[in-house]
Image 1 (cartoon, rainbow, N blue to C red):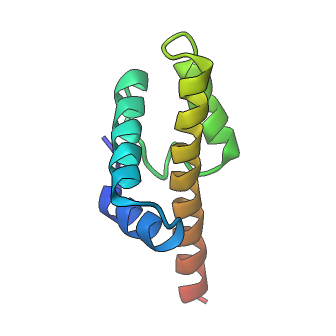
Image 2 (image 1 turned 90 degrees about the horizontal axis):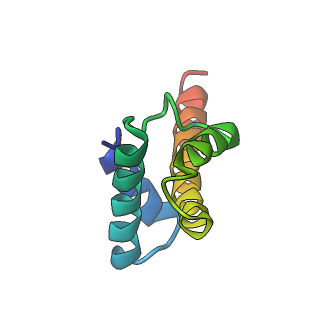
Length: 94
């Protein structure tokens, strides 16, 4: 499962400029990652580059390196969204 999936879709459409087909593929990839590692993806376990590496290590042996490299792209988009939301929230509370 992907926590904040709707926010992810809204954010990525606005900030990453990808097509609807690419968006569907990104969501499918995140859901696949979640199933493969047996964890929900959320701002609690996917919020920086270190988190991406931790998840990538969990995928080794389950997927080939090309697939993991492709997964890292969508994981990076999710991290970018989380960082942006945190920065926006922090700015709004000041």
